[in-house]
Image (cartoon, rainbow over all chains, first blue to last red; front, top):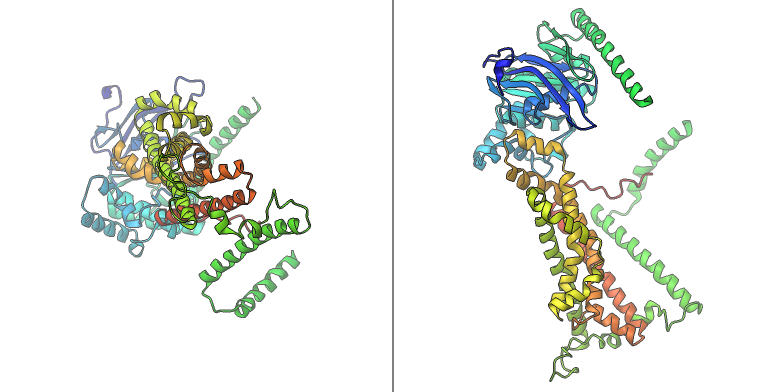
Length: 274
Length: 309
């Protein structure tokens, strides 16, 4: 694609999106526009949270950046190279458990290496190291169904880290966990992120989660998803969720989102009655 | 609400007492197995009991529906009908050959062999073709319409073809089993492939897996559990078809004995064969279940999840 049409991007950007759009089932009667005109730069080592109402296309953007789907408009680049297909540099962590139930924990973690034909000793060593980083050394020979939901997501993070990605893409990874586990996992994720130096693009619809994690929060509009506003979170880490500043940010984000949620509801009702 | 709570509390209190009172001679897994065996015996006993009661009260005619104590009483008498001599060959005396008891086992073995060989061929063939159809789109376009068209045809309709092509012997019976299972299992393999969790495939894709690696390392392991279930369900179909195939020109087998029993009006022999087939079917299912538990250790055991309703 001719990239000169777009605002220039730097090869230092972990991810650069230029006027990205995605229409599902384009050219058919079921066509619907999920994303429009997304312009976003993510710096190396930056933690960016995509926040928006359900169905606003934030997960779609993640799939586009991962290279699992192709955008219908615009350009996505990672470290200067256009994204055309999936790459081990950009690991995606899913909301649902995605560990292979037929492999043990360490075999799951080193799956990417086995794809490249790495010898077993090397795979086991990498898995041992990655599992140590997520605090699950003891589970190395267990099977996924022997672990709790939180532990399984930690293994999924270890599997992503084992590929030494430059960008970690996370699609509501903690949505299926209870509130206490979720808070634990957020702390854990921040530790892992700091150690790895990777950029994180994190999708959520939880305002608390966005304020707890992000360097910048990108607020999406309802369908089609567009960037409504970008809010830097300047709070020092570790963050106190009960500080007045955090409270004020949550209030601001709640107000930003409310209009979009109301609009999404009105649209759905109009569709239902049509 | 309050009474519920009280019940729960008293139930919790009562449970340890009951456990302590239970005999501790057997370890728990043995006890569970014994209980299952007991219930199986009780179930069969109930069925047999009703049948015998019908006979004792004169409700059913023993000439038409001989109860178990009659058709199981004289096994040597039944066994002599299991003639495994190759009677159609010139110069062979039908009276030659193994003893009646040996003949029963040879007959059972011959029929089981046909079922298992047919099942194995059908499984390997249909899984390979199902996977190849999804892998190569050209193959799908060329073969899937034909397979879909042929799948609803009753395997019985293939019987003349089996005899035309393979004559008599084991081959037509095995062919019938393969034909009965092949179309079904191929279509089922394809739908299993389509139902594989997209996340599994996407994980492999983000790690740089090729199409071949995705099929070999993700799709095939992911569809195995359902395939084994399909195989188990189709095993009953295989037993059904093999009996039909054996009634015509196979030489010997349980189906041949059954059809002879029908022609000679021998209900005792019919029920004896039915009992044998029942036991064999149960054993094959048991074997497949054991295979399933061994190679599919990761599949959660869901039997009895609705028991608490």
